[in-house]
Amino acid sequence: MINLAAVATTPTLTGERIRLVPLGPEHAAALFESLHDPESMRLTGTHRTFTRADIDAYCASRAEQDERLDWVIEDAVTGEYAGGIAVNDIDADNETAGFRIDLIETYRGRGLGPEAIELMLRHLFDEVGVHRVDLEVYAFNPRAQRSYEKCGFVVEGRMRESLLWDGQRVDTIVMGLLRPDWLARRSV
Image (cartoon, rainbow, N blue to C red; front, side):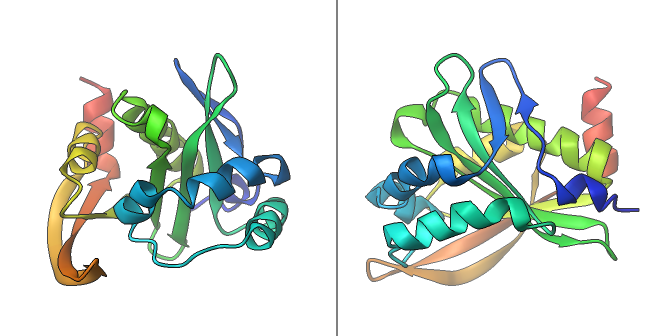
């Protein structure tokens, strides 16, 4: 059973090298900058351009949201913005959730994605009570797919040619992780 109280307030989660902190107005400038990075836009399939006013309003509204979890990934030593992770599509009836993650360029390839994902998964499985977590990754991002696999996600399917990027049609790979598989990984 989903613990909706564990979704109503986004907690701070601390790892070895990073902290997940609730997204708020103080993160608007860094988020705005990251959303205009061409490589981040490509890796996340983001076609839309956001204005600073859009981002300011979004960041200011996060504390009022009780149906999703939005975190900033911070460097635990410097407090610098490293990216974001969001749990969306929480389905209490089916005990499922989806998520997305992005890291800014200077933090990619350093193993921080799996650390952030593990912190999020611990919260989702232990506190929120989900049974399944899923995600989508584009076929042109094998590095991200490997990171998800390190965290226990398995490929469950493929949505063929679901993204049109720079004139090329790209497949979306669907991945999932079930609570029993996550628990088995933790006990090893």
